Image (cartoon, rainbow, N blue to C red):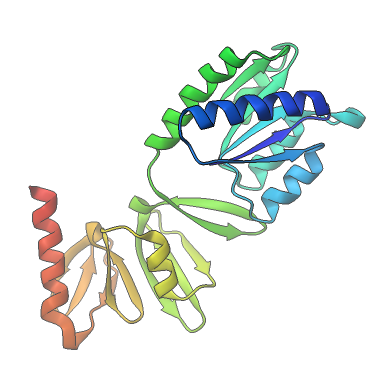
Length: 238
């Protein structure tokens, strides 16, 4: 788990980082904590692709910078992780709904309160569906595996198709994406195609998906590939 702590007070940063280190060590959760003195550096990191699971963000930062504004910019850059505000009051509670904040920690800091917030967040994170992360316009989009219908290789890039009729360009080899997904619902049925078997409607000399798209099957392995699909269906039914 990767966590960011953004506060202009070195004392507050150290306290939160120590609390988090103790909590995560007690829970046996592997973790790393990134420290930020201001919101700009935090935003730059997220834009560069740093995948922070949780951000602890002070409401009042140095030079008049507001944590709420930093949070808005993070969301505008497709940050989908959890945000917890650090503040001396709950005056910005209403504004926090806009940026989907996961909670507040009121100063002075309390280890018990942090544990309470983290218990809820960690439970939600561990129960979240699997997602595949893609860099888009300087930000990160997390696409649930269940929404990916198929991925096709196109020269030096791949096109990821979703059930919402979205297409994302991924500059990786298909074999690399298959390895990163590491999910039994995906079948490498052709050199150029990786299909989510949950979307297959018919299996002939090619796969026809429920949205009408067709996905090629490697013909010399046609029987074996169709058998993998049939075995997957049997496992789902059992």
